[in-house]
Image 1 (cartoon, rainbow, N blue to C red):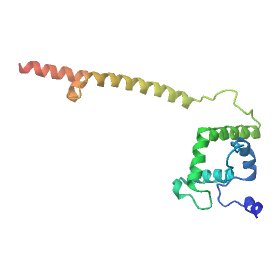
Image 2: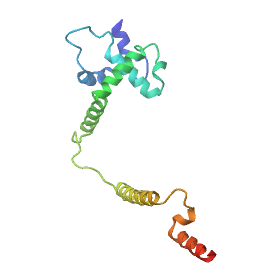
Image 3: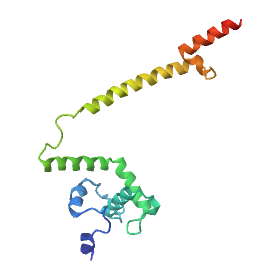
Image 4: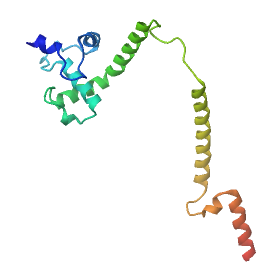
Length: 163
């Protein structure tokens, strides 16, 4: 009965046998001492994939999966172990090899859009730095006209005429 259930997918996000074969060696081994885990890690990963795809709350996890507290605990453990980053990197390398490329890129790719973005980022950072210096030297109660150089000259001229 369990073999039949394993072949059928309950949700579109469930792991296939091929995907599970690649991911299973990356998961933490069960402890040698102490209580054995009662939950199947494949079901936990299926639940995490379901949560990621549906963007629902942890407490809204369907009853087909392990309890949400258990899934959340394993999710936090996988995040601490950087397991998701490892799975992503391995899947990327496998896809590159499948296409016929090297597993890891030999050089970065920089196109004209990236270069333009980098220049814009430097300009924006410089502008913000200048603004922060001017803002810190100018009291908040100073009128807006006095905050710019041309406006300040006008205010000074007006003040001199009144005297």
